Image 1 (cartoon, rainbow, N blue to C red):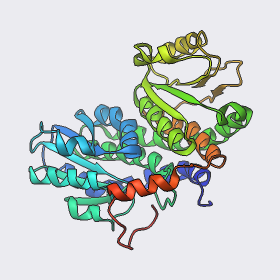
Image 2: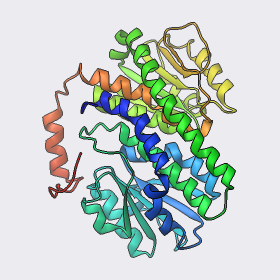
Image 3: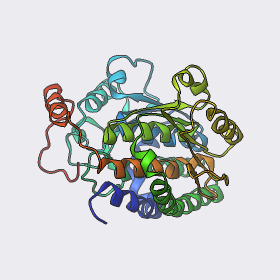
Length: 363
């Protein structure tokens, strides 16, 4: 595939399949560390898309490992998080491995006696000096900072880590182990299908999806992670304001700002809340006609992206992130950020990432 956002999106399904097929090897060093002690909590430290990808996996990890999984931003952990002990297992996540906040947070974790595993796409980055062990989560090389396949493969890695660790600790049976992995393989093929369906959906709605103005994205469960990532992607690639809301929280204030100029995007992640997402889709039309819905329901509305699938709710974010990634990849080609040079100067001044050492691949 070509080194473009859209090319990377197209690669994501195959990468997930490859990683499922080598999951024992891919996750081994992280699983080895996890099985050294009887941990009672997993704490994930991450920022940006890494935070969102972790959120997409959080509830599945809890379901399989029968353990509390919390996610905290790197800055907050470094300065404010103080409730943990030696039974807290830490993942520090950063695709480039150069996030100063994340690496400082990992230093704090280790200083306080916590087991810290680094997940990255660049194992030769400086992150390796801040963790007990460092793992490449299997994303290949991604050279564009508006990451796409990195998010999908991170979510998949954390799911696979949970499956492999639960199997080793005899928390799940062989049948459950095989079932989860087969479901992930099936989901990866639905990812391929989603790229095709979402591309057609974008083309059918290109005028509106290029002129987004203000976007509100609504999700629930693991798909709240997809909503978070969708809002981040749209904001950073198109310059349009975008915010993610947990489904019911949208009604507790944010809906007040919704008006005919607003674009509202709703993710139907299946599961018990699915009917409620349909109710909200219908209700939001009282406020704006610019309502987009990602669902497996047949609805006669070109703004509705319908994809028939059997993906379980706990893996749904793997397909639900894709429409937002496609909007971002297509709209990015139409927009030049007038503040790009100033933003780069600001980032250099603030030093939020360590310089490259010259050994890293990708971003």
